[in-house]
Length: 115
Image (cartoon, rainbow, N blue to C red; front, side, top):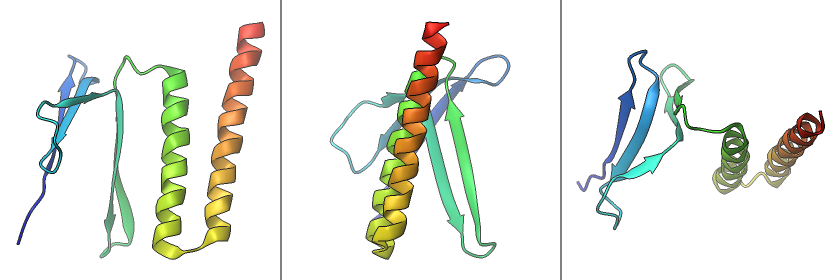
């Protein structure tokens, strides 16, 4: 049976905080590792009916980048949920939440800049 692999490397500082995240995958045309400032990795454990997660971000990840990352992740999760369930109503609710989240972040940034 064919297999595919994804490799993730995390370089830590002295306090074991991520300094660098890089990854590569066997099913890509990219030859070199790709750098990332943050990652979310989730697995579903069907036996325990529990989500297992690894959430990491580097010290260089800026707050506005984190907001973009969350927004795009919410939107991607909505698309995945739509493909998996065909539940358009809940998909739209997830997307609306993502839009509201991002608008609130932008409003807070504007307020903070005005101070």
